[in-house]
Image (cartoon, rainbow, N blue to C red):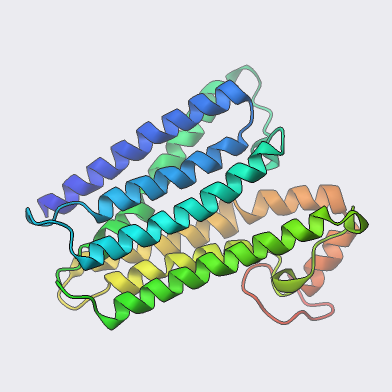
Length: 266
C-alpha cells in the first residue's frame, strides 16, 4: 500500500513541476502548441520513471522494462510529431482563448489541471508495470502489440493528413482519404487504442491495484471525445470549412473507424 501511495504522490508532483515548465515555455514563446509537446514528453518521462520504480527493494524486472520502453516509444513518436507541427504555426487554435489580462494566470491553472488530470494515466502505467508476477505472460505481449498498433495507426493517420495538406490541390478541402475516410479523428482513435495496453497488462488475479489501469483508456476517451480533443477541433473546422465539413460529418464516423455511409449521422 505504502509503495503505491508513495508512487502516486511522486507522479503528481513530477507532473505538476513539468507542466509548470510548460507554462514558462508558453509564456516565453507565445505559442501554446508547445504545451502539448511538453505534456507528451512529461507523461513519457514520468511514466517510464514510474514503471521502473523499485519494487520491494529489487531492481526492475522484465515487465517493468517492457512497460517503460512502451511509454517511452509512444512519447518520442508523438512528442516529436507535435514539436515539428508546432514549429510551423504561431499558436494552437484549440488554446486560442481570449482570457485578457488574466491569461497568464488562467493558463497556469489550466496546465496544472492538465497535470492533475494526467495522474490517472501515469498511475495506470505504474500499476501495470508492477504486476506481482516475475515472468512475462502472454497478456504482456498482447498489451505491447496493442500499443504498437496504436502508435503505428496514429503515425499513419498523421502522415496521411500531412500529405493531404501539403498538396496544393486540396486547399480548402476536408481530408477524407485513407483512415480519414473511416473516422473523422483516426489519430485520436489510435491514441486511445494504445492506452488499452495498460489494463491488458495490469489486470491480474489477486492484484486489486490492477483495476486502476482501467483509468487510462477511460480517462483518455473522455478527454479526447468530450473535452480538449474533438469538441474544440470540430468547432474550428466548422468555422474554417463550413458546409464541406458538415457534409463530412454526415457520412463519417466521429471516432471509431466505420465504413463511410452517405447521410450517416455523426
